[in-house]
Length: 183
Image (tube, rainbow, N blue to C red; front, side, top):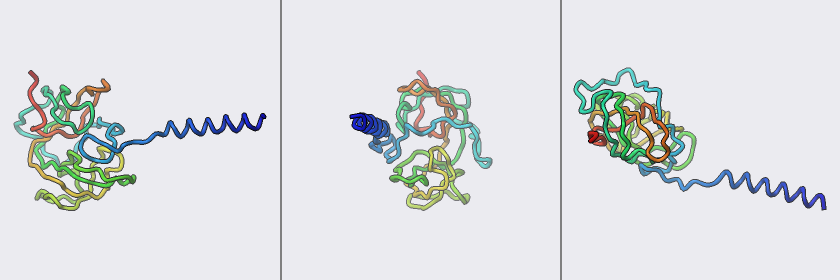
């Protein structure tokens, strides 16, 4: 009888551990297979040395804007403070994380200065590149395909997640088209 109880307790414990591991449906807001809920949306605010500050951005540093992008949950509709504005080429990319797993499709945004061996000329849709960006786990060093390229002003922003209420500091990146003035 005692052996049966010990076995029942062990099986229950194993079941609880396995249930806690759960499963992930693999969905993300920007079309990829990686769950952005595990992404650290904040950054140190450091930018590549060769990144050019925007001379006359639509949204200057310390200005307020509303984010109109769904790169991840809790972003769309958030009021943001601009912490940086830079002129560059922004890329939507598809890549397979170096940590394994399914490809992340249409990830927005990686900038020109975050791509290994980037020359002066921008990459084009279909180009194969290696990412130096570390926005998400498994991104840095990953091979990627450029889905689209856009010459634009990109913004680093701080905001409060509209779903969790968590403060996001120096999020990289949103484009000018993804911001609107605060009303």
